[in-house]
Length: 324
Length: 120
Length: 171
Image (tube, rainbow over all chains, first blue to last red; front, side):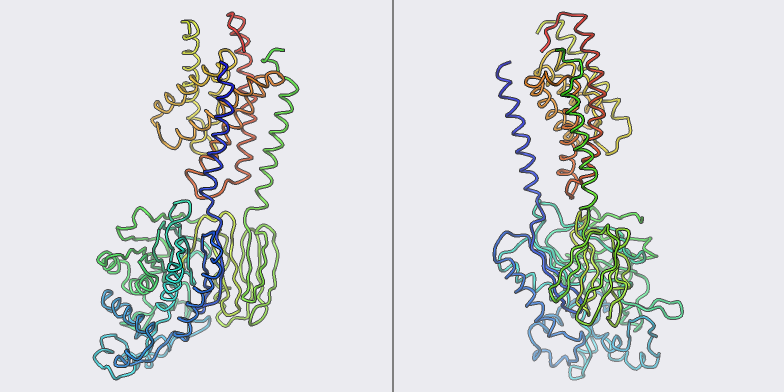
């Protein structure tokens, strides 16, 4: 029995040490966070690191975002297809990306919607534009038309995709400086680097499209970008009908079937563009497109938030939250 | 001394454990969630989500009014053109945020965050 | 270990397993957390036989109990294993050094509180993403005190009876 006198204190110390070690390992709170106004929204960067140059890296990432912001300041760019080569590199990159998503979504993501979207003003008490003005602008909508008429000026609406692009540029700045655990967020277009410091996946909440302040579910992700297009972000009610900012390039009117589409992709620009394109396509055709494109996963929410469909790749990583 | 008869030391142990338990029970409630209100001018306010109050804060365009009530927070008034911040209504979830970009004011809820980020 | 001691230990372990399984059917404030009624038998073993025997009974209780419940090596098993062994070690230590001034009841209380605390710490570390909430922990501490007093009194009565029946050496 004598040796038990040693066993007990040693066991207690072991238990205490392992508990404290576990607590330190999952200490996921030691991050540096900073926010700024960028792209007409709040840009927020959180970096988990103990390095001293962390704040400097965040500042340089914000500078990169501000540079993109200044290139796309008004969200609308007037340009001819023939003049693409003269545009700054960043603009070219965004337009080329938009071109590829245009093809993949059968034209449902179309930046040339700019001719139409400038006629709309999504503020409270607004009215939809006159049918004649929409009709007159429709010939200027269509990326294929832009390529067919290279010397004609088109108006590109790159607001959404540029925001995602800014997030991507900022994440590249952080990654190139060796920071691999971070969240870069610009108004809900976000990119996560790596995993949480406790080894768990990042948990991203998805807003309920109809119950303000509530979440409809969440997804657990690592090292990817997430973006959502929702009809509840910018809209007005006119004669009892909701007019929101996601326009269908085929009609020039707000797209109907979806209420929100959340896309997971490798880059925030892609996620952003696909969120818009899949929203316009709707849950049925959109799901088929999302399944067919490699590296794209999507969550479609419709019917007052009652219906949710997912691509097969995220079936186990999405959790539906019951309304409270 | 028989080890099966309760002693004064037992009493001390029980009372101190009960006090510790009650202390934990009460202490956790006050530090549950905090609301962080920050402006682009660098002003930062940290408030408890459990203390109901109205906060007036000066932004780039003017004064924004933020209300904290029943563990929720919202923009009541802001001098921005589209009032997107006010439209977002009440937020309550840890990790959620609402911002008035034109006025440069951001409100976020920290504390026991169930989510690392919220989209959009 | 003579046959009589062995048969007594078997009886105690059997009682612990039975109570453990019964307890799993009671409503609990948190899934997987046990309130620790079966600790009575471990406590009796500790005071009537010693720490090694108490550890043995505890091992049988945790393994046989979880096998019977069909949750062997599940999160519940990990919580139960970690919590109960920490508690038995602590109670053994108290029994060696602090009895007297403490009696079975004080030892039982501290054991139950530590059992609950370790379970909730393991639960938060292994199964959730949040930090341990003060009120939840406080609740489990209070519950531990209550259950500890109860099991302590029951154990004290049984130990007295055992001592009257036999001439077992008491620690």
